[in-house]
Amino acid sequence: MQPMTGVERIGNILRRQPVDRIGLYEHFWGDTLKVWQDQGHVRPDEDLALHFGFDMSTCWAFNMVARLDFVPEVLEETEETVLTRDGNGAVLRRHKLHSSTPEHVDFEVKERPAWEAGIKPMLKPEPRRINFEAYRHAKEECRKHQRFFCWSGVNSFELMHPVCGHEYMLMGMALDPGWVRDMADTYAELTINLMEMLFAQEGKPDGIWFYEDMGFKERPFMSPDMYRELLKPAHTRTIDYAHSLGLPVIMHSCGFIEPLLADMVEAGIDCLQVIEVKAGMDLLRIHRNFGDRLSLFGGMDARNLVANDRDAIRRELAEKIPAVRGNCGYILHSDHSIPTTTEYQTYRYFVDEGLRLGSY
Image (cartoon, rainbow, N blue to C red; front, side, top):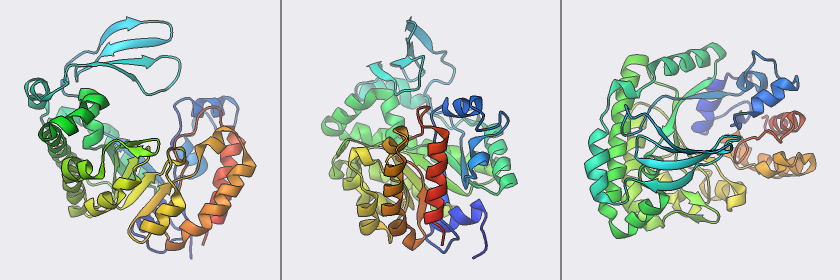
């Protein structure tokens, strides 16, 4: 088969149709590019997508905070952290010296009344929620380099917890499920309305990429019954909208979400990403159980890359790639992101060996 463009390759992979090789994409921590540029491995004017020949790119174009005009308040600051209140009424502590998940300190919304009074009325599909220019530029860059272009953003689960926090959201699932269902439906409607506005002005992407971190180690955040009742309808609605435009849907989730996967497939996802090994996810098991209905993206243990253990990387690639390449539905990616501790030569080896094993 003749070499394909990224648009062709990823388009076929997401539909499990013949390709020349497996796909390639990756996420990196913010400082990794700078470290590799400072070390001379990547030119100062070169991005990682071009350097490694990634097949796709994304654009995060929506601002979903409730109060768009709210100026974040700094409540406390030290040399290492800063505590702020944001436009969702959430008080979060973030590290200043490195990238990390913010600490949840307090939330304005802890139950239904605060949601209905303070947040829901603010969630209007206004054009100023959309970064049209960034989307246009990212789309043009993808066309220039023949990469597959994804609109990317969060779906309902990842839009609810910034408002009320995981703890209150999960308690709400048990104690006031109607409230959580209302939040999920409200965000699904807002997402679709904003997509309609963006795509009408700037044109459709090649695909949709939703981020939904619904699990932690060896457990999802909710039972399959709760997912089915409270979140699946919102997922189905947003995915049906994408499919109505002919767009395939990638859904990302960190953590162990395998108990939810049958329902996620039924909701319509076309591809699962990131398949986190340390949380208990198993790429080969998921491929055996869902590979005929689902393309897979990731599932390579990032701990081997962090440790710069080429022997472990080689063994894992040799074990997994020959199996998952069989139905033409796999994209190479770690199961998390690449930090500054990963040496350039380690990641270069991961890519070169992975693509060698994944060529048809």
